[in-house]
Image 1 (cartoon, rainbow, N blue to C red):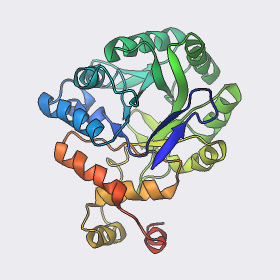
Image 2: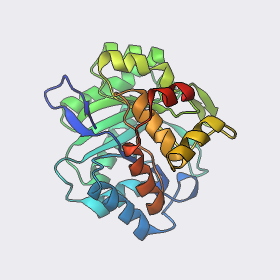
Image 3: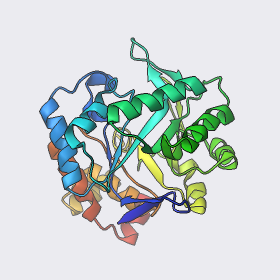
Image 4: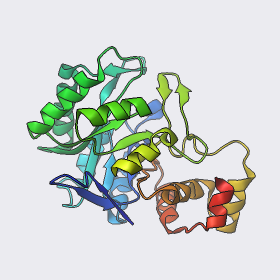
Length: 289
């Protein structure tokens, strides 16, 4: 199963339809170095060796931790590997999340990502929107498209967007992909300490209409409800974990969804990758909804 990002552009990117999100490779609270650095490096190598050719990262994971791990584990990169990063946010010393999205901020973030990933151009960059930002969307996206014209970015995407923000973004230029929170149990907006996270369900039909891949984040963290016999029953049938069924549900939900389940465990990585082989029936999908 593959999916194509920016399919109507001169340089589309086709990747396998199960990627890997690196956020969990950091220390606690997405801060600092991993507890087991050698395992973190092995996770990245095993993912790529197993056919994963889409990695999601950000220079504010760690800080800079996941970017540096990717470069250490995989550089020089395989020709088919797509590394996607995010800009628009940063962390304060108290570990809180704040906007970092003025044009100057965004340019500094891109340069930092290029440096830490050891790249001359980043293939896909998501502009991470922060609901309480005072910088207008057109000003943020304008800076992104300017860096795209300068050759620092190949494709521009949006992250954490409402339906209205995505519609506005599509009027400003080509949006290659969307990254929103989405899972079996968390489909619409959820309030987190640093603001609202719009759900994937709110933009999925718009993404499908425009041929834009939807990349779910936090697909496992908030995926599994406290009590839900439906997903547990289907997991037992397939002798799989509920996390695996959640990934399979995302893959079945729409051909325009590109899951990127993350983990800091090599065992769980291998389990997650096996979810791509689970074929849910129409009846099972109807039960899950």
